Every structure is written in structure tokens, then in C-alpha cells.
Image 1 (spheres, helix red, strand yellow):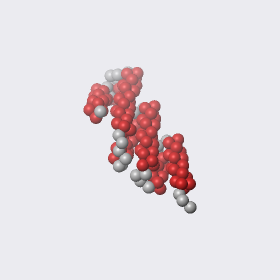
Image 2: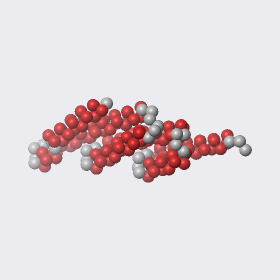
Image 3: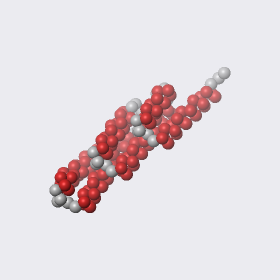
Image 4: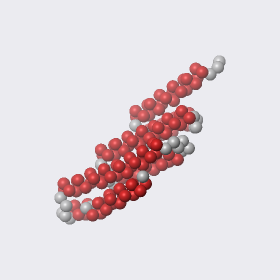
Amino acid sequence: MQQDCKIYLQVAKYAKSYYGSDDYSKGKIINEQYANLKKEISILYEEIYKKEIDSLKESSEVDGRAEIKLKRINENVMDAHSKDRINNEHYTDIKNEISIAYKKIFNERITSRAVEIDETKEDIAEAYSDNKITEKHYELLNEKISKMIQDSGSNSPN
């Protein structure tokens, strides 16, 4: 998987250097070719990041390493988007995939109770405020925590 990512990045870098914005500004390629090239590069970046995210979704790491890797991916995606390597459509798709991966990580933390619920709630709120998870995933995770707290409260002896 990592080898695929390296190949995609090499192709994207080659394409950008061979038909980059310098050639466009010098009139060597027409606007349509430039737009098509930017779209192809954006697609390659999207494929790279989705493969990285999919590999994290398939792993069963609850010790925090997956969350650290996902944070790095999120930062790289935001950087690539700010440098216009990823168009808005692909950026939105990737951000949704990142949100789904974060949701999976938080779900595992909630159900395994590997971390205290209060700490998990804080981490979820922080992830939402940092735009790492969507509003829908934020609401679903908070509902799950509330239900678990409610269920554990009704099962405690009085």
C-alpha cells in the first residue's frame, strides 16, 4: 500500500513539474489541458489519502497510534488543499472519509472503555471543533455516550 502511494506521488510530482503552472503561464499548454491536469493530480492525491485512511480503518489499533496517523493524514490533506493540489470536491470527499475513520476510533474507545468517558467526550468535542469530524458524527458519538451512561446508571444497584 505504501509503495502504491509513493508511485502515485511520483506521478503527480512528475506531471506537475512537466506540465506545471510555469508552462501554463508561458502559454505552452492551453487552459483546458491545465484544468484537466489539475483534476488528474487531484484524483491521484485523493486516491493516495483514501488508501491511507482505508488502511487505518482496517487496523484495530486502540492505543492511539491510529489517531496520531489520522491526525497526520488530516494535516497533509489540509496542506494539499491549501496548495491547490486537491480540488474542493475531492477535499470534501476525503474529509468525510477522515470523519468516518475518527468516528470508528471514538466508537472503539467508547465501547472498549479503554479511556475514561469524560476524556473521550472531551476528545470528541475537540475533534469536532477542529473540523476533524462532521456534525452528524459528533451527534451520533454523543448519543452513544449518553446512552451508555444512562444504561450503566440504570444497571447500578441502589
